[in-house]
Length: 307
Image (cartoon, rainbow, N blue to C red; front, top):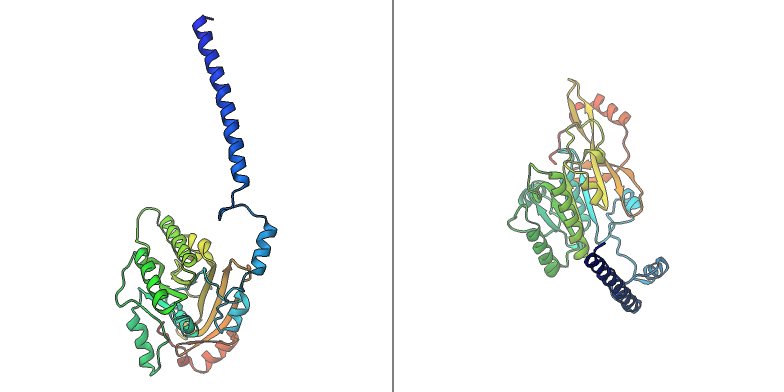
């Protein structure tokens, strides 16, 4: 080996030794600093966290007033993102409007992108009824989450709103030919972030990819992205029972099944039988035998309701 090569190698070894020694010193200093670190993201044990949970004020439980739903969910909670989904014309918006009236003390904020606020209110006026209390922008902007957050802040500042309804997901996610599922995932995470940041409950209406009405939808039927279910704290599916008419046509009945299909908080799921009655969802058991009897007696009782 040439003397110059040997000297170069020796110099490199000396440098490595010095670097290792310096790294060891830096690591020791870092350990000393971290031993005294007490920032918000400091490490704590699960036992400490459990005691912290036990001693903090009881969490607000927002009850719907539907006993079956409340029994499963034990109330909606602040910081949650709740997805309401159903086949077309199955009652998503009407269910949320009925829920709005039940949660009026929380001064709900509505973003009625699909069906305008005036249209929602007109249905009540047509029935000579007072519409439920909610707040809504006079004009809306689609595909703009920054604007949605601005209006949420506005509602909190002016009315202490704790409930937000968004109708529906595809008005805040621009349609794209490239990875629409990922764009929906980003939007779902952003909405969940808004719920946590502003201490509110967000109810998000979502559409299904399924067009059939004769079978109950499930999580696989959520449109465009599995992230809708993954990022939601709760997913509620609404399905109206269908029957065969005298001429073989599909007739949508007033019988409604409200199905909690995802519940991150407790894992408990289940179905609540309801009847749609003039804009209201009323808990009541029903069965196919009952529907067959009614259909045989008077087919005219089955009507296509305006949801």
